[in-house]
Length: 222
Ligand SMILES: C[S@@+](CC[C@H](N)C(=O)[O-])C[C@H]1O[C@@H](n2cnc3c(N)ncnc32)[C@H](O)[C@@H]1O
Image (cartoon, rainbow, N blue to C red; front, side, top):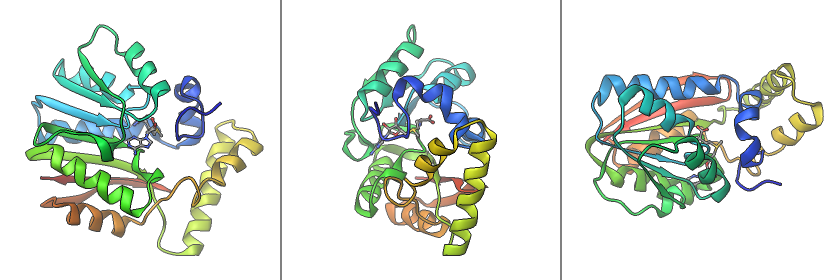
C-alpha cells in the first residue's frame, strides 16, 4: 500500500529508489558538496520532504551534529527517518513544505525530489516558504524530475527513463505504472520554469547545479 506520494510504500523506498531514479545517490552527494563550498559550517538545516532520512544521515557524517529539522507530510516516511537517525538530535515535523512555519531560521534548506507533486500554485507557495525559512545568505537546494522543452524531447526522455528502470531490474509492468504517473501524479516543469520560480521567490543567486536525463538540481542563495 502506498503511504506517501512516491511510487512505493515507505518501507520499500530505500530498497527501490535506485531502480526508479537513475543516479539518485548523486543528488545527495552533489547537495552535500555544494553546501561544503557555500556554507561550510551550517548551524541549522531543514530537509523538507526528507523521505527516509538518507540525506540527513549523510549530512551528519560530513558536517557533524548541528540543528537538523526533518519534515515530511507522510507519517510512514518520518517514522523510517526517526529509526534511521535514532541516537541523533533531530526535530521531526509532519508537514509539507508549503505548511512549515519558520522564519529566517536555516542556513540550508534542501528539498530533494519533493515539489514535483505540487501544481503551479502549490509549488510557488512551497518554494516561497523555503525562501522565507532561510537566513539571509542561506542556500536552498532542490532536485526534481523535469519537463523537457518539447513534446518530442519529453517522449525521448521518458523512453530513456523507462529503459534505465528496466535495466535496473524493474518489471515492465512496474515501469509502465511509474512512467504513467508523469504528467498526472508527477507534475514536472522545465529548467527555465525552475529558474523563474526561484527568481520570483526572491533568491538573488539562482543556478542550475546538475542535469541528467529527466532529473535536475538547482540552487538559490537568499
Ligand atoms: C521521492 S521522495 C524523496 C525523499 C528524500 N528527499 C530523498 O532524497 O530520498 C518524495 C518525498 O516528498 C514528500 N512530499 C510529498 N509532497 C510534499 C510536500 N508538499 N512537501 C514536502 N514533502 C513532500 C513525500 O512524502 C516523500 O517522502
